[in-house]
Length: 347
Image (cartoon, rainbow, N blue to C red; front, side, top):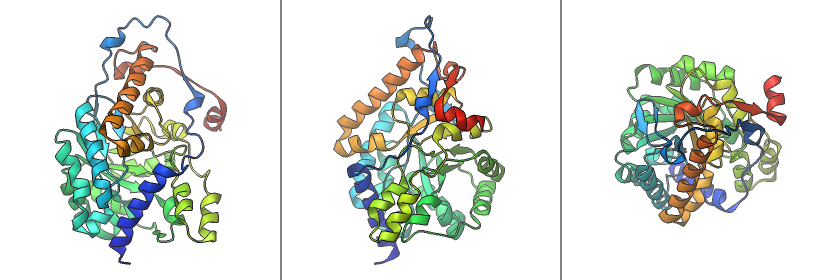
């Protein structure tokens, strides 16, 4: 099987597994975060403003539709629905890895449909760090051009690569490739993890390379180790994946280590609007969700719209109960940290 065909087939495998199997592992730490309740909120729930800014763009709410899919003809309709909802609600959205479409131009429509359906939304392209190292600015430019992107996410997924039978095992030179890109690239670059979190040390390297923002991709949500366990045909790879199911930095801990030095998207185990409120109170600019939106997106636009509406309703209620009339107010909200998360932060 050609490499480009393998890549496309793998994308469909990932989509199917995420929808049909249990791939959520561990805790992101949000249950250990308690926002301080304001018994006298002194604001009007119906007048609360969810508008915010991210990398110079105005968004109607701080919910980020995180990278999910694309790269196979069967994924086109899912991206179409996600894009329509992003446009309708004024949200930012990321697409899945565009590697397959960069290798095989016939697959570009599974990504370009996003800009067709969301002409005004803040859209993020997506390219792997290894592919950036190997193909340089040319692929970065093509990824952005493919969907008329407002930003480019360079994803780090080395836990998954270590377990995949077809994974890229050489991570040398990726930081230099990111730095080279950021130096001359006109489009803002977001460096994103995909489920294992980012430490303060790695964040320092990323900021030093010139990234415009960081997407934490913390532990506690979708586990790509778990996904690869489901894909594995060999016992040794299945065992390797299981050994690393609890590997990574929980999202809340990663957020604590990274926030404060630049724009941050908190993804990884964000499951409702209350989690988004907690993430923003702890320093995130946006809260990103993927898996909770994938299944309704597969079901249809109406189901997806209902889920997004519920998430934003939960966020608005959490803001009301902390006396936050705006996202800026929410960022000033005090939080209690308990349990395992507190122990990790203290250590």
